[in-house]
Image (cartoon, rainbow, N blue to C red):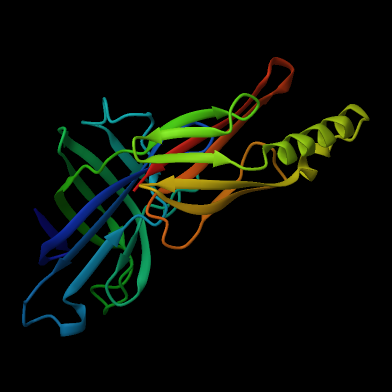
Length: 259
């Protein structure tokens, strides 16, 4: 593993990848973090550490890691058409990666090998100012992927995520009532009816015998929400998509669960 910023070589001290789920498509979103440092006495001490990372990650185009090896993800600008950032580099301050390419060199059951090249703003001096070239190659352990399951609120209130974790919908009836209210407004020719959707689904997550309260906040949408749990909850549970077809008895919450 290595990290090179223009002509300065740093040693990679840590690297990691993590995965989330993209709302709507349910594809995996990948995040990469790399820390590196140098003991070169020609470099000012406060500049001897580098942190390169993806703030929000990027969509890999699939729901599993199958077929990921050999893929290239390229940003011609700091932000692509999906609003995904090319990345961020921290030397003196957090600055933009202005363009870049992430190549997935190899994927095994245990690890993923990545090469990341590009240009980043550093604002160190004239030589290390804007669009400074960097290159790094790392290998990171693959974490447990988020588990994704579906619960139909019209048929069940408890979703078993794994042997240690379950999620309970506490007030689905309130959400269903808000859905019916917006549908009636739509049927009465209110074209903005679904933009007026306003409901909170209260949740209870039980993990290894302990319970944590949470909520899914639907504001201006019946299908997308923000999921929040109590501080200290050891499980990241997120409702990534909601599918509604009450005429056929379907009100599905797509839930991902990871640590």
